Image (cartoon, rainbow, N blue to C red; front, side, top):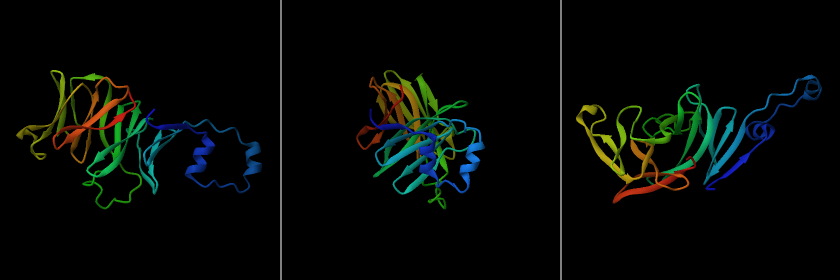
Amino acid sequence: MKKTIRLLTTAAIVCALMVPAVAHAAEVAKEAAPAAPIKASVQTEGGFAAVQVGNQVYVYNKDGQLYQTKGKERVGDLTDLFILPYGPEQLPFILIKSAKNGYMVFSDLWPEFAKGKENDPIAAYYSGRVLPTTQTKIVSKTGHHYAEKVGDEIVAYTANDFKDIKKGFHESIRVKGNLRGLILYDCCPYLVVDDGKDTLSVYHAGENGPLLAGSIDFK
């Protein structure tokens, strides 16, 4: 496996996230009904960790919380924590299985949207989606990017003018394989590809062609 996955008890997760208030709890505990079980798990990858408690996911680095899923449209089960490069940086992304919206990818806020929120430990950005089956075309939520199958290759396109998509699109990246997802970060497209490996491959554009950026444990 490409990462460590540990299932934690409810008590362990709670202790890790908060300092319990235990004053005069002994007598109350004797009379209280048993607490309902909570779904809890941890995934680690590189210098990052994703912690699921209930249907929310919290992402951390060594300095503390970076972001979390929040709101009925964004909660669900943690499927994978993975890292993608952005220039010299390594960024943590999470793949969430939403009962309503399918498999959604989240990241920390893009630099454009983080102005004034650089230290916000909660806000996350919906960066794209991954599909459980091969697709012929995927369009981003804003319509500024799309990916489609062309022969035995997948091609990602980016709008020429983000203020007027009627001005057309240009090719950003082209790789061989089957299309399974499209992820964006700071307007840069990452293609999620099924190319016959045990995991899904994620490619981005390099100076001399497509580069393998990372992988997602999801088939």
